[in-house]
Image 1 (cartoon, helix red, strand yellow):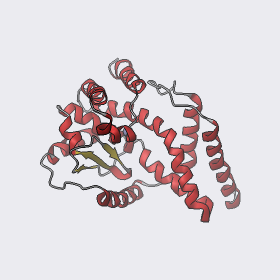
Image 2: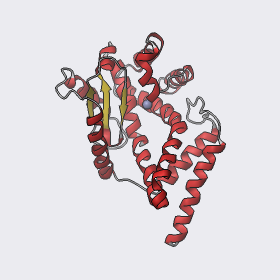
Image 3: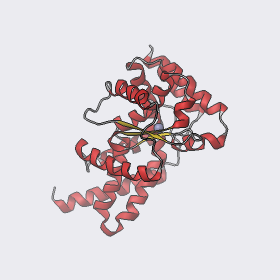
Image 4: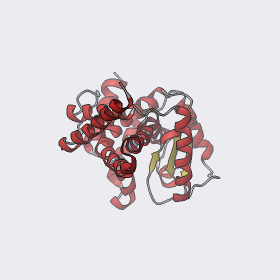
Length: 261
Ligand SMILES: [Zn+2]
């Protein structure tokens, strides 16, 4: 097809994705086997993924983009570059990434100098972040590996890089309206974020299990963390990783019926 038709088709795809999002006023549901998730949502999400994959980003570019986002993170958060337990964290990361699907990503774990907030997150290109409070809150290496494994799974399954691709879709198709489109696409990632969380729960648990850690210890820790902490402490963790009893049940079901079958 010629360039003009291509562009028109891409616009249809993108508007279609927005339309579907607007119509599908549903919550993602339990998907221990990746099939039973609400079909509407799953379909819309895979469709959105196909649309943004028209703007592929190579691993080399993902690393460059990730490094520039990390530079912003470094100014937003106080990172402890001489953290006493850095070697311990690096060792866990090294053990986990031996079993990732996408190779060539230079994973690096950064410690945020925050002893009050339980938080962990990741961005495209393999930058992982964890607060000191999170490290100190875990009592075993299995628990910490479970948290880190979940974050690696976000990167390994391209959740971070797809967010970058979505903003590229906006910039490329809408020209001067690109900023607006990028904002819309950010909104789009919110409900689908729940699907990403389910996927990282499963893939992270599989990664931890394959790397020889006790995945059930991690699961128990997840539950303890959510039930014992007061809301103000776990607020940020909940914001980036919305916990629900359903999510826990899904993961437990996946571990029992798929990983440990
Ligand atoms: Zn997550």
